[in-house]
Amino acid sequence: MAPEEEKFSPRLCDFAIEWAMICTINDRDDLAVKNLQDFSGWFMENLKREAVQIGVALNYEPLPVMITYSTPNNINSCHEAYKNVLKYHPEVTFVVHVLPGQGSNEHVWMKGLAERYGLIRQGVLYENTITRFGGLEISGVFRNMVQWITRSGLHLVRPGPTMCSIRVGGGKEPTVKQLKFNHGDIQEAVNAGLHSSKSPQNNISNILVSGYPSMHNQFGVAQLLTPFRVIGVIQRSDGTAIVEMENVFHAIQAAKTLNGKILDRNHTLKVEPLNELTREKLAAMT
Image (tube, rainbow, N blue to C red):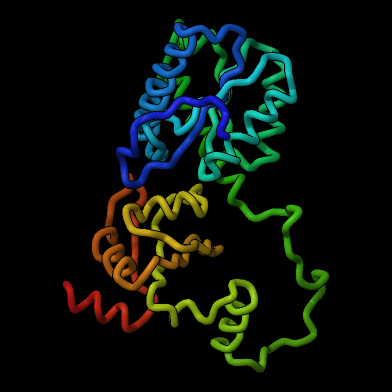
C-alpha cells in the first residue's frame, strides 16, 4: 500500500516531467499541509518562469505527482521518504525537499540520498514556504535554482565511472589498426547482444528521437511522445534516442504529429521512423 500522499490533477502538458516534494516538518496540521500544497504550485510556476527568461528548458508538471513527509531528525524516516518516491513514482527525477531549518541533518541526508538514487534535488527551508522567500529578490532566488538544476541534470547524464560501467581494454594503443568486419554486421551484433534485438532499422515500430534537452532520461523521452504508447527507450551517446512504439501506427502518428514540435526556444523535437517501409507509409500520408 502506498504511503500517505497528495494526489493532484492530471498532466496538463504533453511534454511535462513529473516531480515530487518531500516535507520534513514538526507540525503537520491542516494549515501546514494546505500551505505546502499551495507552495508547490507557486514554486514550480516561478521556477519555470525564470527558466524561460534565461533560455533553459525545465518542462516539469505544474504540481508534484507526490507529496510525502518524514520525521525531523530521523534518518530512517528520511531514507524511507526517498525510497517511496522512486518505488511508487519511478519516473520522478526531481525532488524538492522542504527542510525543517538551517543546518538541519536533513540537509546533509538530502545530498547523500539524492546522489544515491540518481535524483536532482533542491532544498527549501520550511520558513521560506510560508513567507514565499520574503525579503529576498525572487528572480535571483529562482535563477540560482534553475542554474543548479541544469548543472545537476547534466551531471546525472554525463558519462562517468559507476557501479554499472563497462570498460573495454586497458587504455593501451590497439594492435589492430583496421577492422576487417563489415560495420553493419558489427552494429547488428551489438544490438542483438546488448538489446536482444536485431538492427533498429528492421523494426517497423522504431523511431529516432532527437532535439530534446540533454537532461532528459528515458522516462523524460517517453513522456515527450505522449499520448502515443512507448514500449522501450534506448538513449545514445550522440544525444538521440531509439524508441520502440507499441505498433507501426503509433510510430507513424508520433512522427507525423510530434516532428518539429517546439519544446522551448533552444529545443525543437525531431521524430522520424527508422524503418524504410514505415517512412514510405508516413510519406504517403503527408
